[in-house]
Length: 292
Image: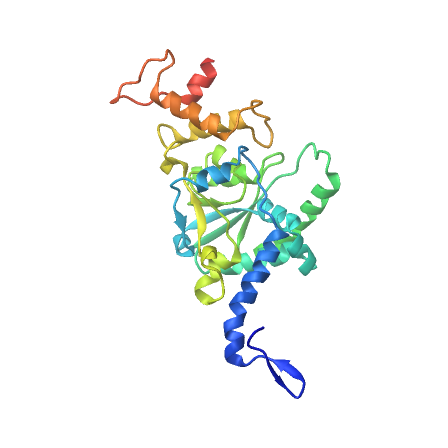
């Protein structure tokens, strides 16, 4: 506002001054929007995403998706739209806006898009109204995705969307899973892409997206300094058993640091407390947990 000019009682900015001011306004707008759209966590407890974010997992640009076939957990996108106060306030159909914009952006990079819709649940649970709305949103989003040329796969009744998406990666039909639910890793997905914000996919086309939005998280447990020692999937299962998940409470008083230290201790020592040979395979944390 320091560059405002007055002419005949009217206050305005020149074109050059608007160009200088817009990035500042954009930063302020996005910071306010993020305050009303806090990141939610699904799947493994213990603040799992911050564990992998603070490790050596590579941050990938949108070009990392170039030529890949990915399975998208549609239920995670619907939950994201449902939880976003900003999307709900700005759009009459927040789920359709989110799905449309991301499909258009992803088609510029991915070779194939497969959307996975979770099956009907035998026991809806307590939030029957919420699940009814999400089911209606899922049907509408599926029709939109198919109209845009994406393939949709409906999981069997009682099967989670991230579980079906992980099964597609194990069968070799897709290269990775796009989801915010870390349970996909427990179901066997080798690579998960998350934080696919619109800015991360369109930064190269707009100079006003923040630099941090030019990165999406590529999570690959086999490359982790703790989970990647030995069988990465079995180590993830141990971590989830200790800290808890959506469906399992975990052990009381056990947090992420204790769980990680337990896995590292098992990797260094055998069941009897003896040091494992350097040339042999590292001790298995899941076997130790089952032994106990």
